Image (cartoon, rainbow, N blue to C red; front, side, top):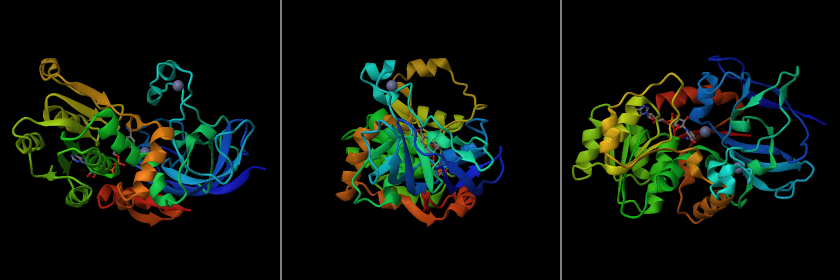
Length: 361
Ligand SMILES: NC(=O)c1ccc[n+]([C@@H]2O[C@H](COP(=O)([O-])OP(=O)(O)OC[C@H]3O[C@@H](n4cnc5c(N)ncnc54)[C@H](O)[C@@H]3O)[C@@H](O)[C@H]2O)c1
Ligand SMILES: [Zn+2]
Ligand SMILES: [Zn+2]
């Protein structure tokens, strides 16, 4: 029997999100229905609502979630009803050219549920990042369910499902930050603050947080930043250089994703350093740069999808570090809200005083 549950959708481009009844089918082969317990509000949900990601409205939003598997379809053996799982939006296929070459974090054929969720009238919903977890229940591919230690609360665990993993991984996996390195992070929302926490976990010596918002900078300092740069008053490139003996940081993470912040990241970086773009640009954004600077400054310009993570490897490990008190996931949960408060959470995101609003179901 399909489940009729409450969910939060973006019906059309730019319109306020609405809470409504959605229909979640029983799981087919390879699928699972998950009872969602908590789902963080990520900037990518706002990008969806604004039409920045695609035009397949209506979207069922929410993609940073943890919950308990309720039922599984035929052939599912890796997860079972009752398992506490973090939902991931890159269930690797194991067979594509990236997977076959031993680089599954680049998988080009990630799995999502085959059946759609719908509105009551049958309108097919597009699930944000193939998840759609601002809902009491959601249908996913079983590979999108990563079991972790149920001792972790869902509010904290769910954050690993997107923003915190993206930021941590941008610093550690994509940027390769390690002991003694210097790093600057431009934009310290949920994603950037996680890059700061990741850099601390990896042993970075100098961690420079950059934001337009004083409270974000304070939070970043609490999470391990050694220096803060207020981008409203300071020249970001100059400030980062001054803090790194005039050279620039080994790694600079752009967790905003705009041409101007990417250029700051590029020039705030030491020769042969690494720029990591983790913020998501919109299709109309263009970059104009002297090509000679790309050559002359050397190093690498990378993008980070989901922190180049491998959910099966990274989620259980990071939950273990959290339970040992070494990864402060609770510090990212600024407020818990209900399903009806997602639109308000977008406003709060814009005004700048939360790392994450987390919907609790
Ligand atoms: N690559 C991925 O896999 C991935 C995953 C999750 C989110 N994202 C993207 O990462 C970005 C950040 O997401 P979030 O949830 O942390 O957003 P957020 O809105 O919580 O944080 C953005 C932060 O950037 C700051 N900021 C904005 N403009 C700035 C500027 N010019 N200079 C310095 N700081 C500035 C804001 O004050 C805010 O603190 C978004 O674009 C989101 O879509 C990417
Ligand atoms: Zn996200
Ligand atoms: Zn693959």
